[in-house]
Length: 575
Image (cartoon, rainbow, N blue to C red):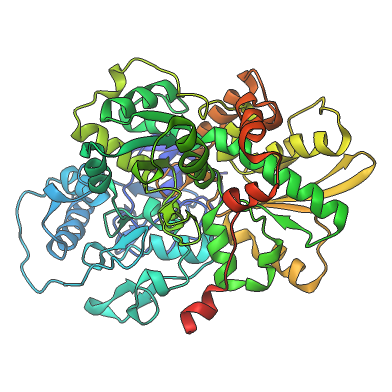
């Protein structure tokens, strides 16, 4: 330990701790822009500069370690002037459209401008001008709003290890862009949206579907149906200043009905359906020794990654559609027939924590004849904006239940939204399918948590089943290389592109606090623990669906409607 003084306060800090962290430990907040917790500091933006006694210039607090006897001032007149000047220079090279910006009131540059009392334009000069990249089905990139903090680049390179964007050119001409400044749609981007979550401005944002959904709701010919993913209910309350980890399922259902949706179903129903199909597929592969390990397919970011980078392993990925696509497919086949509705009049909107789901819903193979399974996807953030536009006071809404039969779900479905949840849910049903018995202990603690790769061995009927859970696409390469080389010991592998799983998806409320993710995760596990039924094969509505329509899991009809195929995307792009 070392002792230093910060703003006159004696501080005991660990040797090697930065000035930024030492200040935070005693309740002193130093602003940052380029800093990312748990990554090596870059000290690029200098907004965290502080005065250190004996030092000639200002020192970046995020990058400089503490030392014995150090005396630091974090809010001296010199520091304030420097920070204000940095903010002013950033503002003068930034579009002046705050009132119409999607990040208005949720912008770090705007917050810093207010904090340091920027009330006039003191600097005038050349400004950058760039075209907005709208080529992707999921995301938009506006380089004019980029402040070159580098957080998106670091998230893409160091966390996700994709490298779809980077700095190019120098000085005033510097820009963060894709290789050759081409569109995101032809880059290596998997559209996970993790760059959006770390972007301090609106340089990166989701492509909004609010207008088209609003138009559908006002079209009397359309029978609009909403479905809600498990991760949304555990996070949307943050946008309304509710305590972290508040389950607001009932409020979401009421809010969607007030927007004009005729039915509101739970995507968890389709998560149970996915488990029935996926567990059956896994058992078939194990018993027949075909294409093992089997990878999960519910994360479209992971599927896009495999199609772009490792097409030789595509036959190892489960052919099951993701839950919201399965739900859409069932709505436009079984449900439409049962309710006497023309499928072309049904408009399915998925409320998702994810940006890449927008891309997924536009995939041409995810259709029933000519109709897309899902017509539009709204992120958690978009739903909040929609509620505000409609004048819906979310905090004061009464609770209501999902519509049935496609709203019934089990606890196994709820944990789909967190890393390890799909694996855990699948094992509960795979065990039953292989043994005819129920698991006594449903929790698989060894595959829970935030580790990059979690591995375990499960004994099922005398057979040792080796499993792995990949938490974040940046950790998948070692598992993929094992499969390519023929050295994989695994039978079943879950992959979630976003660290933490869908609960930390690119469409979730923007934050810079990792502890928020864990509180969201806790909600999903609590829903599972409190559920009447905790195994997907116990879902009575799913059982009825098989009796009345599909016959049995992995039947010919189930494959036609609930399963899909994958393609070598690099080959397609090159042609």
